[in-house]
Image (cartoon, rainbow, N blue to C red; front, side, top):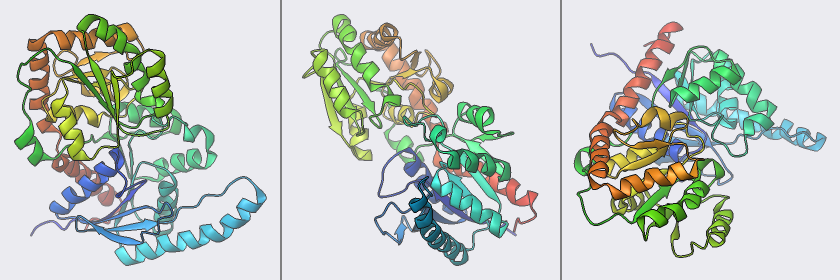
Length: 390
């Protein structure tokens, strides 16, 4: 008799129609878990769009309110009303979907409400960190006592905790009291890997560098722009293309002007997954110069397209990329070293092809099916530990 899979609510800090690492992770995992036989719903944060209940990829998605109290007396009084009303919606979602396990992805206000609901209903809780405690330019956990206390309590309460890299778990242990924890990485679509992963064939001298992500200080795009004059001095007419949006776009444009790089740096704006794929295929090197990075899904996308990678040696990137094998690692704040690594790949076609080929081979290990199976093991252990495995 086949084993019955549990009903799981994936509680995401953000979801479709927004695009990003957490959104992609949860959406892909939901589909993969359902393929494994799990009954899956997604609960996410209502940002004021009043989306209510939608169906995305055949999966029910509930957009739930998550107001938090502020420090002023008036705000506290308003929260007394709005908070109770919001919590009632979470309880109604629980009664409708009847999940046997709640799985928080990227702890924020979503985590506070889900953890409170899990305590009230005695439902097993799994917490997954996507680097939210280290990758936020505004360091929200340093400023919000509610999130700090809520995360610490949720980690004690959880029957399973995972992080997308060992560095993420290290931060949870060091600052938030986590004991234990398991690494479950990001992934890519297996069918796309099989069909579209190929090394870039040798061609004319490389001329295009691509960087993709949120345009925030933590992503280090300013470091890449600072390295560009040294790259151009050594390698000729090289351009940088940056895909994404964020609060640092205007400062980056100012930096481009100050360094007299107008025409050598292009801001592509927000990109669809298909546009990212096309840009990566066309690029000669994908550069990931993050000051810190929980995992580095951009690296997987570059490997999938057969494009060589130069990446930061910080945090999750340093764990993911094997220096000199499937990418080059460098201290991103050492501008000379960053430029040197890029020039090395641009000037050595054999090296570029070897790095791309190794990445292309390795990316097949990072599939969403494998991620979902890892989570299924965490669920089984969590439910078994409280006697609720059905």
